[in-house]
Image 1: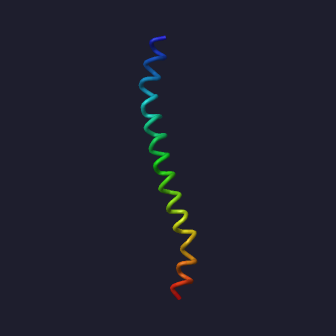
Image 2: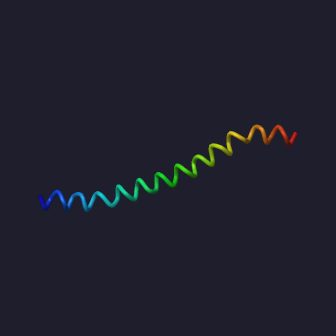
Image 3: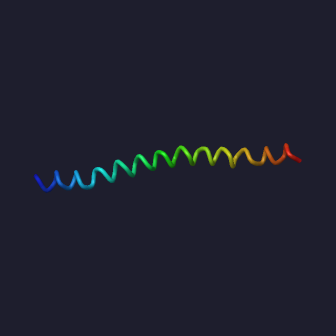
Length: 47
């Protein structure tokens, strides 16, 4: 039982940090996607 608790403690923290970083990257990626999608309209309006 102690081995399982040690494994969870060692592996659990990196998983939580990874999920948090993935969430932050996802929100920034959404902003990049929206910017790229609006780019053709902006280029047409500048012509």
